[in-house]
Amino acid sequence: MISSDVTVAFVSLFILFMVLGFYGKYWRRGDLNHVHEWSLAGRKLGTTLVFFLIGADLYTAYSFVAIPSGVFAKGSLYFFAIPYVMLTFAVALVAMPRLWSLARERGYITASDFVKDRFDSRTLAVMIAITGIVAELPYIALQIVGMQSVLTVMLAGTANGQVVEEISLLIAFIILAAFTYTSGLRGATLTAVFKDILIWITVLVVIIAVPISIGGFGHAFSQVKPNYVTLPSTLVPGYATLILGSALALYLYPHAINGVLSSESAQKLRKSTALLPLYGVGLAILALMGILVFAVPDAMSFLSGFPESSRGILVVPSLILYTMPGWFAGIALLGIFVGGLVPAAIMAMAQANLLTRNIIKEFRPNIKDSSEIRVTKISSTVFKFIALGFVFVVPATYAISLQLLGGILIAQILPAILFGLYIKSLKKTPLIVGLLVGIGSGIYMVEAANNFGTLTTSLFGTPFGSLYIAVISLAINLAISFGGSYIANKIHSSKTK
Amino acid sequence: MEMRVKTRYAVLALLILIPSFVNLGVPIYNRDSPELFGMPFFYWFQTLWLFASASFYVVFAHMRGKQHD
Image (tube, rainbow over all chains, first blue to last red; front, side, top):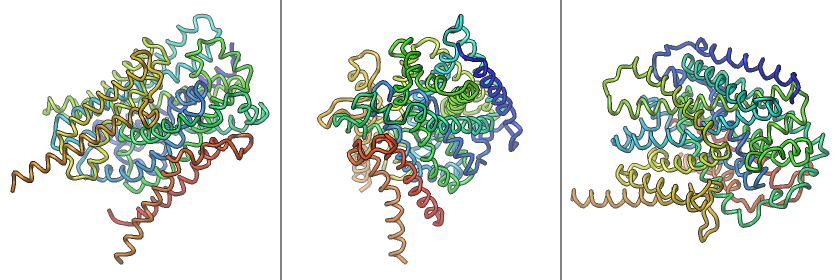
């Protein structure tokens, strides 16, 4: 059982969080009956706020749960998250301001808007919207798994812990749904700042206090196997391709593009993107907790009470609970809890935009502005509860594996979006075929690599070593997209001669 | 004038390529020593490299902002 200090700090900060979320409606007021006002905060966010908002996209339960959990279970391989975030900002720094400028000029709100306009293809735009929505679902589910892990640790030993946990999650989601409905991206941005303050306090305190209390990092590293200290040479190709594939994929997620487009100017977007690697420092500290925990006997014995498959996700909350004073643990645990909640809101909002603008509107073009915004708000609520239901039904570890699959899917829209920004010769039909083959081959390789069972790896054995599947299927996709466009252009030019 | 534009683009490209090359060049940092505060090189190097990357990117953003799109 935990001390009441933890609960008091946790609950009072949650109330503050809620107030901020609802207050968002009045902050930098705009007419929230317009889609771009609700979902892009009126495209008025400056350098600092875009920094926090995109930071919230990055600093999600993926950082608190999936990465430390991976480091804890498999060692140094999962530290790929650090170079991955560095590389992703290089990609973003070059490509995203261009997308931003086009979007401002032509009124795009989603990546699908761009694709439809650029390639004049409804099919491709709808396919890209569907890929975005599907890939985003397990990502939201992962956020909920992160929130769940906090509650599990806090409620361990309580009578009816499981029931209390599910009810608490449901309440948190109703509150979240209510304030996103009324405040839109403004509410999410304000709470993102709040969340980041808590998280930064947490990681900085933990990285100083824990190594001191356990007698230095060296002590933790001496407790673990060699594959936790450096990367075994067989995993080097996997590490490099995980960096590359994840870096290319991050900015293709609908919520990331949504964050980009809410910036006030291309230059402000560049400035905030340039500083975003600093966020990775917190991510690195969280990842290291997957190793530090080995030197904290109380936390290890607590974790041993859980089945091996679900220990990983509990690493960060239990490390905090067993090394920090109660009131501080309460603050930190709330930070992690809302660290799942805020991104979940941003992601569901991005999905809803795609659904209304790029799917429903395609088939019902006469929909009125007022109905469009209503459908967007309602579907963003529905998506949140779908993800919540998903988490109640499937085991937590499965949600993490599905997120791996989501990354492989989203990477397949890269040719149309990133190359579409620069290369004029790309044609829609090869892009459609490339996308389909990319997705098909990606799913097949994931299944084959996991022997058609539970998903535990996203690496596929090739003559060049085990590589991240997203990169392999993206290579196939690019070959088709470029090869096909080249042939199509040849045929076209010989016809016109 | 022509030359200066080219130099400028080359510098911009390098500001992106250098950090990317280091990030993807895993063998560069896949070693355990020298340690820092008991942390293997693999971990502390990548963490500190975040600051270096941010510096490259800030210079890029600054230079890029001065030219018209």
